[in-house]
Image 1 (tube, rainbow, N blue to C red):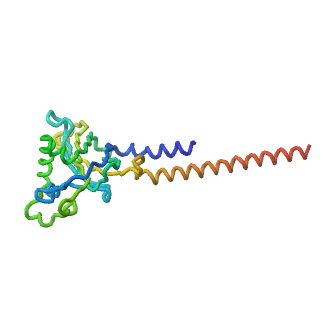
Image 2: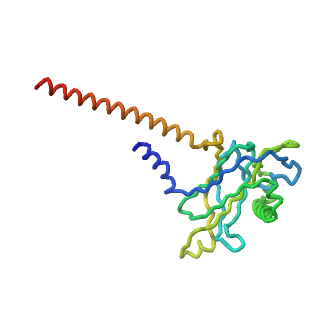
Image 3: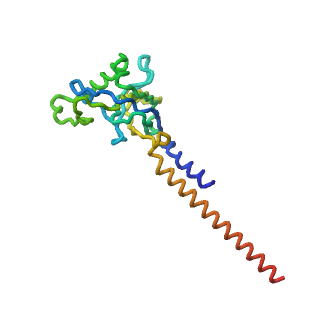
Length: 236
C-alpha cells in the first residue's frame, strides 16, 4: 500500500506548479448549423473538438469590476461533440500568474437568446476580426459544412479575473495575458476521463508487480528462517 500512496502523491504534485479549473458537461443534441453568412466561421473563434482536444493560447484577464465581477470574457467553440457523451474541459495555467477562472458551456440557442451573452460574444469576436489585407490568408477554424449540416456544438465562455496585488503600478494597470492550456477530455463509457486511462493502467500494473514482489520476498524470508531453524535442530 505504501507504493500506491506514494504514486498518488506524485500524481498530485502538478498542483504545486500549475492551477486547474474545470467543468463537466454532456454533449447536446445535434442542431442545424448555419451555412449562409453570418456563420460560426465568421466569428473567428478558436475551436476544440474530439479530434483536436487541446489548445495552447493566451487569455486576456482584468481585475474584477462592478460590470464584470468575474473578469474579462473569452469565447471558444466546441464542435463535433457526441450527443449524450460526457466531457471534462480543463483550463490549466501557471501558479506564477494568479488568476481566477470561471468556465461556462452554452448551447447556441442559449447564447443567441440571451442579450448579455450575445453582446459579450459579439464584442470578443469583433476584436478577433482580421484586417481586410490579411483576410485572404486566414485559415478557418472549422471545416466548411455542406447544406443542412447537423452537429453537436457548444459555446465555451472563459472569464478570467486577475487575482494578485503588487506595488508594480504597470502590472496593476495592465494585466498581462495568461498563458493557458485548454483541454477537452471525453469520458470513457461516461465514467472515467480518457486522459487518465494510461496513468491508471500504469498504477494498477505497478501495484500488481509490487504485490507479487512482496509475496516473493516474504516467502524467501520464511524459507530462510525455516532453514535456520532446521540447522539449529541438527546441531543440537
